[in-house]
Length: 231
Image: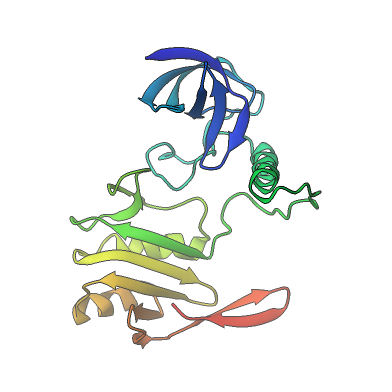
């Protein structure tokens, strides 16, 4: 079913509420936009819908910078200008505290930095075929990634190196970067695979049970304070 609705209130999970006789949770809309949506699910009290086309676009709408946005489930509102993303998150936070906590509070200015290239840790999934990436939203399908714009350069460099390896048997690879890069491996990893990973820009490999090979921590700096983190 196709309907034209006005996107109104942002809520957690990348949805925007629209009203069509009952509440409709829309993905792919910027608050304030008039959009044509496809209703994917009709529940008793609400509907779930996705944007099919934009009738009246918001000035805050943009082309998502990441080339796999929309397939990868990692980011939900990257098609919105960053400053607007921040204000949307503030609005969602205030609404949540108001509805669930029953209190009204003022917010201090949000602490923000660069939009991309800031994350020092990435949790990557591994498909049965050995592809490394992220889950498609709402599924267990792995979308392969060559790099993630959110990650710092060290992680993306190691990610590129690991894609050259046969990593079947692993379920997840968690990369952490500071003065060096360490990897936490979840699943089955042979001694040979671990040694190959250590030769691909990784200083240490950790496992679920707490044992490790090579360096078992990284050092990070926060405003002159150095601290250590294990895989």
